[in-house]
Amino acid sequence: MVTERYHRVVASFDLIVVGAGIVGLAHALAASRRGLKVAVVERDTRAMSASVRNFGFVTVTGQADGDTRRRALRSREVWVEVAAEAGIDVLQRGAVIAARRAEALAVLVEFAAGPMGAGCELLSAREVAKRLPCVRGDCAGALASPHELRIEARDALPRLALWLEARHGVAFTWGSAALGVEPAGLRHARGLVAGGAIVIAAGAGLAQLAPRLAAQARVRQCQLQMMRVGPVAVRLPSVLMSDLSLVRYQGFAKQPAAAALHARLERECGAELAHGIHLIVAQSADGSLVVGDSHHDVDDDDPFASAAVEDLILGELHAVLDMGEARVVERWLGHYPVADVQPLLSREVGERVHAVTVTSGTGMSTAFAIGEETIAKLFD
Image (cartoon, rainbow, N blue to C red; front, side):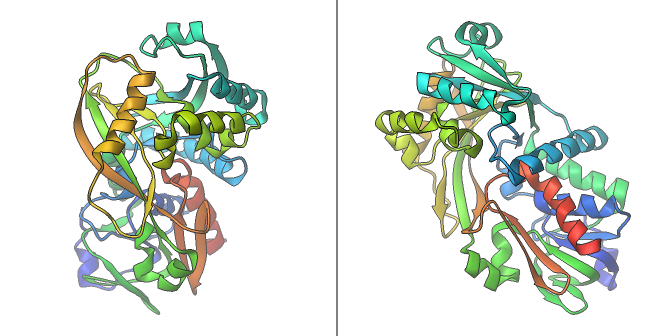
């Protein structure tokens, strides 16, 4: 996908995007839809960082009220449009949050009664057993949301880039690290790309191009342990979550009943809370389950995963799902940027140079809307 002609001449673009993760591609899409000429420069030979090491879960329900939820709703609309045009399979639709504890069910009842619960459905224990017989019998009830989408991130990001190139004429330079912003444009490892505006969407790599901003905001990484489990006999039409998710997702955690749930979880699941564990279970086309995750803020990209943390995640999985014996067939460490500025770090760092980093782990869910907002600032 490297477009070699852009290395031999100084090409000029309306917008240069640094980074071909979901945030960078979202900005490229928003600009190209306006008829702008766009170039994307990516240090790796393909998207292989935060954007492909996640669930591919476009999440609306449970997102923090306000800008994050608004962006998630808009981004979901764009995902539906793009998936159809770019040949990206939507593997699951909706989400089910299964409550094992009475306190968790109380949170779901409060959420469903409020404005963010629009379109969601409360399920009794009997209804859960009928819809999802693989959920264990001690489930007290559940909330079913119709809003979510689940794609396979490692497949979707390359397809999205190919579609942007073929359909919108976006010029990609792969395997070439950005070295710095110059008055004429962006200097990268293979040359110079001239441009009228630059968006730096390099995730945790922000420090290389905007070190002052990265230092001021204390940009670092949140590291996640994830795994793929299979073979399994269960079938999940929707992504599955559990009690632990209700104290991590701010839309749930802000409900009055969440305090009692958190207190009980501290008594019963102290180790899980200490490692930032909450359960998300997504099913892939081959039937295997993508399972996670834990959350640890780190200054450096630690390559080592913990067997103890993995056991805690698997323990929660088996507490929720009656799935028999299944083995871990794949393990990986995911990550996303975090900072003192939440949930989004979006700043002008030079004349018509904008740095954008999603600092809340919601890039898949909110990036398309963020891209539209940034491009409007730069070109309106």
